[in-house]
Amino acid sequence: MINTNNLTKQYGDHIALDRLNLNIEQGEIYCLLGANGAGKTTTINLLLGFIQPTSGSAFINQLNVQENQKKSKRFLAYIPENLMLYPTLSAVENLRYFSGIGGKEFSIDELEGFLTEAGLQKEAHHKRIASFSKGMRQKVGIAIALAKDAKVLLLDEPTSGLDPKASNEFGQLLQTLKNKGVAILMATHDLFRAKEVATTIGIMKEGKLKQEFTAKDITLQQLEEVYLNTMDYKQLVP
Image 1 (tube, helix red, strand yellow):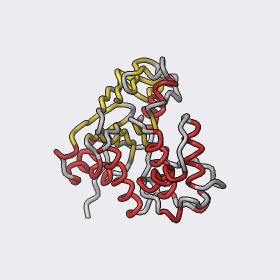
Image 2 (image 1 turned 60 degrees about the vertical axis):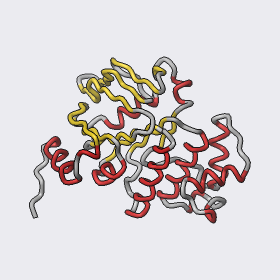
Image 3 (image 1 turned 180 degrees about the vertical axis):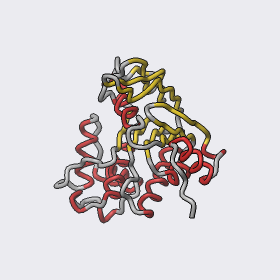
Image 4 (image 1 turned 120 degrees about the vertical axis):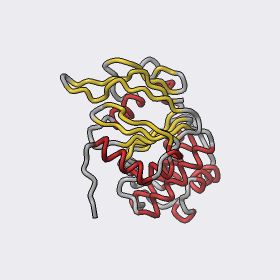
């Protein structure tokens, strides 16, 4: 569902992404780890068609993103670090609006069903977004993906700033989408959450994919050691 072929983005002499090759299937959660400037957000922006590659190609559901931006976006949902919703509208109203943009209309009961499935408590369905925590906003974002019936979900630091409970709930929601066959690419700094939710983990540095492994084959301690070594960080000794 998500494929890149030697995907490269260069700004002048700076290579933001260097010949990236990814293959993410249905029902797979791929977590990209890396420091700021590693190329994670650049990867997501290229998959969304927000920027054009210098060379190489990106595909969503076998559609070349650069050649079929409108068609490829039909399969996509995107949740950035800070999800932009209309603060004066309720959760239901936001969901109805964004569903309408995608050409879909739902009854109030159906909209509430998506919000419930995304973990938003019923008493919050008709409250204004302005009163929501970040975790609640992220749930509305998941509801939008559910209503769209998205086959691909792109996430850029979605758990940043969430408390442990909200982060855990978000991880559970990703597992729900995974079980529905959604292909998920998540850029994150959160090693613990990556280990908890990922099928596959990749570590990026300076625009290059340096390490890639199956999450179940590595412990959290091993992941931390590999990450620190890849980043050339000195591990703190208590």
